[in-house]
Image (cartoon, rainbow, N blue to C red):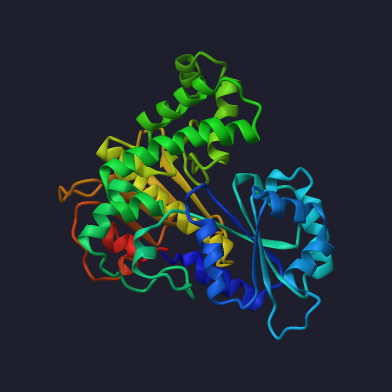
Length: 403
């Protein structure tokens, strides 16, 4: 199936010569999206480090690749070359720097891979200024409805998603294969193999962790406390390792896109608790408790929005939770350029009562909007972001206006 990122890649190369990095978890659709570019580029070359022939070509150097791609032939359009899993090559950064510096005016370059491509946080990196990136996410409500590249962050009105597709997304998650199959047996087999791949291949390849069984225990513990404040020391006692080790392992699980961490927002909040983070899974379908899954479902959609809008250049976005010493709490605070933008409290079912914390924190922070998002409410055609006071909104409507 076509992904939103297909149009994002096309948009990128209309305006930029920089390399494009597509970074995200396995089986999320990066390779499929890359290969589908053959439809719009006359000359497309896909090179995978895992293929022995392609690996030999990469090791032969930039000139050998230029010859294989056909850069010696004058063309009206730039060819495109995609390097997949090249981060497994120990000298991959220097290789890409050399190839880009020589040929960037004559070719478009895509690099796909896992979280090891996350080099943009490292100041002074040899690739700085030579690439942009998109962090690839699972499917979302808005992406299922439309896959065109957005001209603004928020869509101006909600759009209804069919009930069957919404249920498939809720039950089987946003990874393309289980979502499209929508079959319990396939989902169970796929999930089991994906966990095996994560701990037996990815962890082994990118870390020095040998206690794989204990790391898997930690991963399973996260499933049971999704959306809850998490004490590293408490987890350490359960896994029987040190607090330092647990923190290190949690960073590994985050870097491999198994989980992600939300920290509390504390600016301008008196009596705030600046303490434990909360953790959510990239695959919300692995969360059994429906209340926790509801929070994870919305958290994943919001994370996709902050990543996509930041990567697309609309601004710099952040996601936090709010809690003060009086135990007032709201599940999510969405920020733009470090300024609070809107609050989100999540409910699985609808009981007509709106959380008092929404009005309380909206008054303190001055957010433009405050939403109580309810999973079970039917879609309503509206613009949720026209509402200034705290309001109850259907998840289907709210999420269709994101990305």
